[in-house]
Picture (cartoon, rainbow, N blue to C red):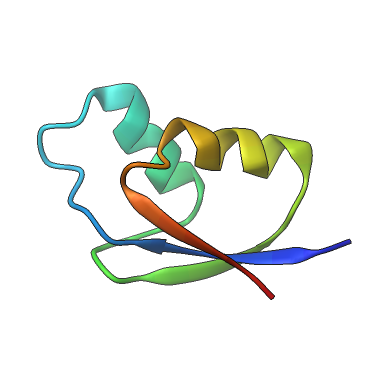
Length: 59
């Protein structure tokens, strides 16, 4: 399965609490923090909900 790198590029300050919880559930701790995940449908769905806050790269 493909892997993706997810990086937080915009602050979650001012975002609604569901978006903050999604970013936290992805394992992102702070700005410019990058995490790697398998590209499962669950992870891709989470990324699509916060796509305006993150940058996604395929590995």
